[in-house]
Image (cartoon, one colour):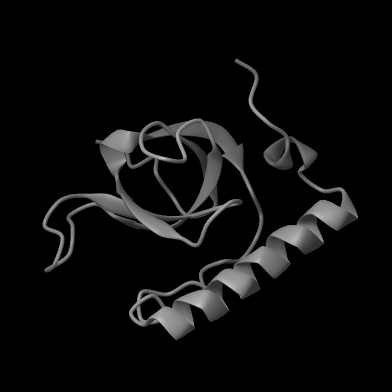
Length: 113
């Protein structure tokens, strides 16, 4: 089977509090991890810090966002609350920089319903 959920791929969240919002895949775990034995992905969105979601709750798009989040968001940084807040601020800074330069404006606009 072809793996289409890759880092920097834009997805739309389908369930939960952030349903209908766009996010970027930071890291994909197809086989799962020891703590989560199911396939999931670490995503970064505009409204909240990166969250883990099962792959059934996201819809991939054909677009990619060329922001390097792999070095900023790691699973070790998401273990404690203080590191998580720090990571969220770094991610927010990268997204704000992208928004101010005017690149990828479609990512920062709302979806039409």
